[in-house]
Length: 276
Image 1 (tube, helix red, strand yellow):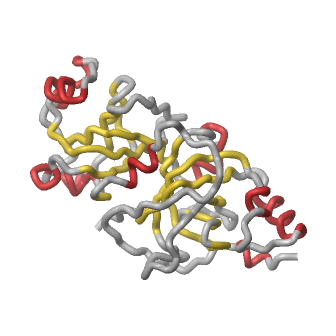
Image 2 (cartoon, helix red, strand yellow):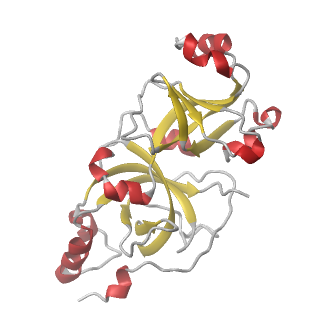
């Protein structure tokens, strides 16, 4: 029988700050959305916090960035007013979903992540440049505020939120920020979040980094954002992972631990933008 410690979270904290995004390939056969949202997210030139853009829009205007935040208010079906730190003056920050893919949050606590271009929000210009028709009365108070006009928007639950209500996120593109736990193989790992009292975590498959490249291997304790789709546990994928080499007893033990947990089918992973 597998040693229980093999599946437990490594507590070592190695919070590593990165800038930029790492593009990764898909190693697990699965049905992905027709629009590869995760790929678009990863192609963001800069992975930043919204506080860094607020007050410095001249520095970022026109850049492709990836941002994630809790939502202060939804503006119709396309707009999100993101929460900003009052330390920076509490200036509103908009995330506008300019894609054809709607995003429906299961509840008001769920954050969002978007990748797009930094713009000063001027309603008439945005409608003209992106060929969209917004509800003018909802945006009247947001003229000239910083905004990201997003080509892709994903739900951004925490690991705990996903574990508590997985079916609410099934078959939707998610972007989940987490700490790398156990690396079972180069394509299978567990993830956790700080403050979550849980020694099981969530299982992620489809992870792929070029392990021959310098400093590219994922490390326990590394903070990352994983893009992909959540689905029910499928132990068949584990049996097909040649690096694991688990026998039937080990697979059964793993399944008993994770049977009520979702499995994240990753099609990308990149370093998290950490607050200073």
